[in-house]
Length: 167
Image 1 (spheres, rainbow, N blue to C red):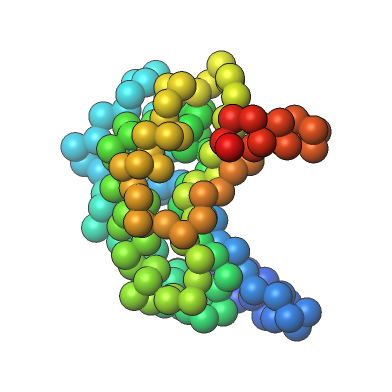
Image 2 (image 1 turned 90 degrees about the vertical axis):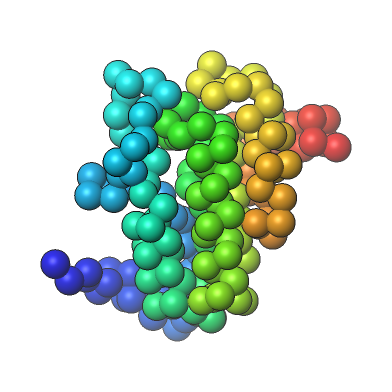
């Protein structure tokens, strides 16, 4: 059918009223957009699938061009280092990130392209692999301008992860 942007348009208008811009989280794949050849890494868990790249390009292009310079940023997925949010391989997620970066630069050049907010730099039982974050940053280098990071917990825990693990 026809997309309904009423909710998002209303949000953008409200943000602009207070001199703010929208940060758009590009997340999730509707059933019609799942890549036909995609096989989940964990077949018993079928959500958060790899989208068809043509459908993904259309999705990103539509949103980036709709709000263009009204966007502050685009965050590509949520916590891609956790298997609970990302059923794609490292290479598949990096391809998604690269595609989103290219399209955003064409349709919303002022918007900051961010990686999906990685969940942690420390141990977590749901990590796809201990080196997924590092490997992704290397593989998708140049596709994003900001490495998004979601360390949950206290500020001390966040500071220790950033100062210790990252630096």
